[in-house]
Image (cartoon, rainbow, N blue to C red; front, side):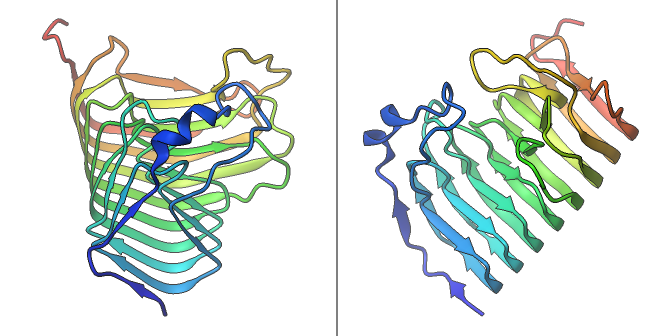
Length: 259
């Protein structure tokens, strides 16, 4: 029953901390603090707040139920490391709408164990787009299901809609029944990407395929411009192939105007 509103700003003063972030090279890096974290909360409303220059994630939801967030502003430089705008994990009944997110990592990241998450009317950029994952990094991860992302705009992001799972997963899980609809891409490098050999480090030696099963995924009404010649990349697991991936009414053109 918590309501957090009032238009205030959470300033993480992250510029002093970002040089100490080693997560791009160290698998077991020490995580820096999150600006605002909601842990095991029910019936929460967050409206009209601002988060700037977080040391790590701007906002995180873990084990929350029935969470509504709207009119949230999030900003950090494009090169700030691991500054995900909103990270959601092991939560259900989550609804985010009408928010502006520009940061150095995923604008919104949907982690493991989530169900019935709706993301609507989000403007994202700069950043890494809206991501599902990364999934399949740890043992005993929960499944992801019932995700809807619609009526969003990506501006100059490195990815648009991305689903990322680790190769060599220690356990099996699934991400299913996800819809991405009415998304506008403006100068996005990878507008639609499934990457089941995800590795953010300088080098990885995948021993085996990803054990995350992807199925029933719908990409509908996705329009705009791609900065790269490959607008859609679907790299599924060699061990557990994707199933029922639908692309419908997708119109993406090269931003340069070339074919």
